[in-house]
Amino acid sequence: MEVKNDFSGSKFNQTLNNVEVPDSLIKFAYDVPNIVESNDISSHSNKQKWIKRFVIAITTAASLFLGAIIVSPTFASIVREVPFFGMPVEWLQNNVGNYEGKKVALEHGYSPFTPLSLNMNGNKISIDSMNLEENTLSFIAKIEGDITQNKDVTSFSIEPTDFGEQVPGVVSYDEYVRENTILIESRFHLTEQQVQNFLAGKPSAVHLKVEGFKEEVNMEIPFDHTKLADSMVYNINAEIPISNFDSRIIDTTINKFTISPTSMRVDLNVDVAKKFEVEFAAKIKDFPYITDELGNVYELNKQSKYITTASNPEGNISLEFTPSVYFNNEFPKELTLHLNKAWIITGVEDHYDIVDLDLEIPLTLN
Image 1: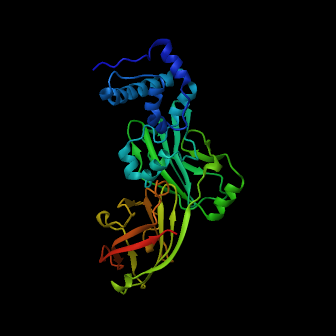
Image 2: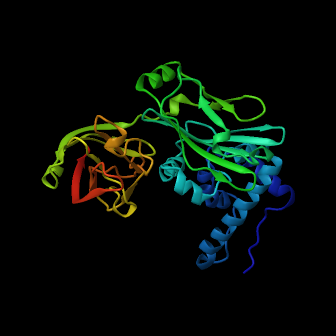
């Protein structure tokens, strides 16, 4: 089948110049069919109209995208700032805990931070996917060039400087090293006061200090504080009868449930007998999860802040799930937390007791 169109020569350039630079490349892809039809491209039969529209949409999108990179400096800068651009999806899925949540948020136009890259003597550092949510600042650092030779994640230090004293809980996850590239996902667990003080100044950027290059590098990541969305917090304060299954777990309470743009979090408090610890996510196949009224499943983020009582002496456990219902077309009235098992750590090396729970706990949103 031959598809004819008028996108050639000067007419192509004229059409390209008339295309508005989109706020989102994802939205642009969705809008391509409308762009095509606005240029009076039609088929000879109703039967073939949708086929031609689809083929023309794809070829037009490819032409506009590649052509715009060449002729439009504005568009070229957007391409350079596409979130997750050039990052292997498998690495993102395995190492960026709320990758799916961030992806969904981006599809809905939520991006208060703008990715930024700096070129330095043939090397390049990019800061991508920055997010400030529930007192946690996270981002991905991508380092490219000869400087990555014989280096790993420990060779570089990237820290925010806008929050006063040294920020607590710096966490760097698995790196990706291949073809002169290092990828690092970092989280900084801030205090509520640190975040409040930062936002009170109506900042336009987050400042990062980068060490590991020949000279110290300072980066300003553009930030539109007016686009930062508030989380929705639901005070649950409900007891979970886990003590019925094992008396060593004395008392378990869901304190609150938080829905943020990229993730959802259940905050538990577990009172466990002395010399014991408890965990609800020791084996992937038995991880807790959340479902909504339509049966959609929201999986556990393995990088939740406090996943066992061993990591917090006060017995607080925070289970984070992704993606979030924040951008759902129909906001649910109720979600269900599924707790499959509990692992009781006895203190004896490599020994723990497994407690079958199979609990379904309603999370009412009102």
